[in-house]
Length: 186
Image (cartoon, rainbow, N blue to C red; front, top):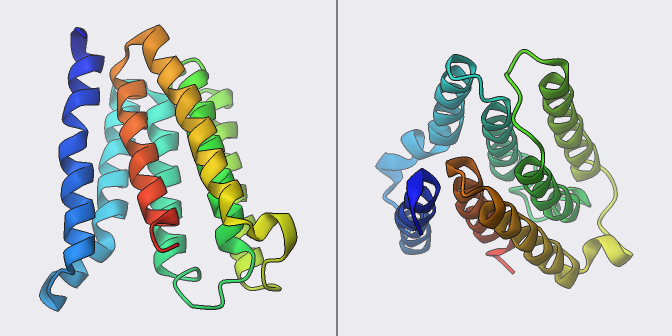
């Protein structure tokens, strides 16, 4: 493995493992205000960097992670989250896989703005279902969420193998962290 993509893919394990260990061991309450806003602050910084370096997929990925974090901490944090969490288990990995497979576009292009709008619509749907009826049937099957994460992981891995880009390598770890966050409590 050579290049920036390989370095990113290899070094991505450190923050994912650190976040998992911190979450599993339970952080002191004093750190809670920092950890509650960390994803959104980092997402805002990534959007600025994405705009500066003309990386639309990075901006959309940052928006996706921030929206998922807000949903998981907010309306999906309760015991009765409705069908919102199972829908998030489907939409989050599928959107990450789509970002890995799509070509790079600058932030201000219509294609990138449409992707950002799709992420916001997905978040709105998850929020609407979180406030609605409890999950039933196929949407509530935990195996389906795991299978979608695995399939998305295969697509992201193939995109990384084909492009060897830093973005695709990063998405591998974003997908792993998302799977831990969404499926970890099951």
